[in-house]
Image 1: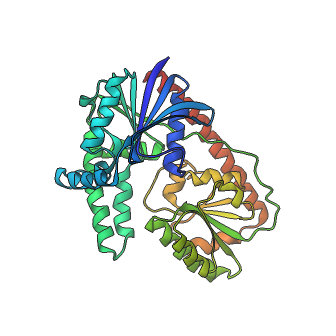
Image 2: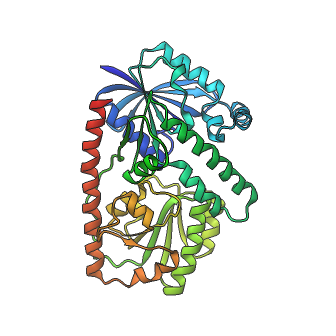
Image 3: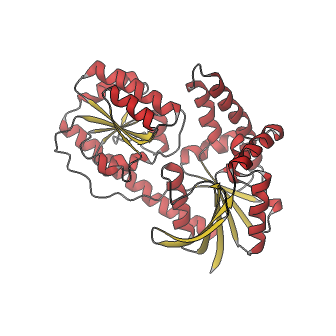
Length: 384
């Protein structure tokens, strides 16, 4: 069997979220035709090698030595080399040397970089084929996030810095004929093709996901769930605005916040009358008594993994326009689309029959996306 190596900054064993779902998709798909090794450049002070089971797939995981001191040195290196700071953290010269040595030690047939932050120029590698999974167009996200950051000067500078340099990297990658590229959503793929003079092969490859048996919708529910990473400023802002707008419509309607957050933030929103679940092992288990799932993002067009959680819990999805486009829901009666959060109260006026119809259409649309994804992955694996 041919050998494939996936280079990532994320640890699929200890973390969860959108990046991990994407990494697990890469592992599951490529393991059908390759023996997969995963090299992680992000978190460990000492190099470590393990054989682990990820779902039904056994893979070799190699943790690259990348201490806090090395990361700080990498940030300085990135500043002087005009590169995004995340590249300095996860693909600094020290990490590049270690990864290059590992690749030379074993004759891999395919090298896959998960996110551009880990990318090493293919000219330095001996691997016959190099593929970069961008996931989404990150420059577009940073362009929006620098506005969301408000009056926090350092955060605005940081997003602007990353935006300019990320856009430059995306442009350079589009012209790299020896590297093929994939993105999760067709929306982001189209944006990338329109923004840059793309000379290399590019695929739209959705994530793997499963639609389980839907919860009973006849239960009396009175909650709006918000799932996300609440270390991020835009998600914290979303919670603040949701509190404001739902109270204006129905003081009895409860907000339920689930995801990664600090203990301090959990305490803060609990004091605001919002129930919070910090770092849950299984998100869907905590959604059973919610009625609506909110996914309002102004900065991203990519597919949002939380939509699968909402569908499996039988929630009515309330989404922004670009989230609907990213999940290919925009032209279907399968979600409630709002342009601004002040439109949120009108979503709570639907009768039970309308809600059930939206949820059914929501699941049908996602199932069609799942079928399309399976076909796209099969074609990609055959051609790469």
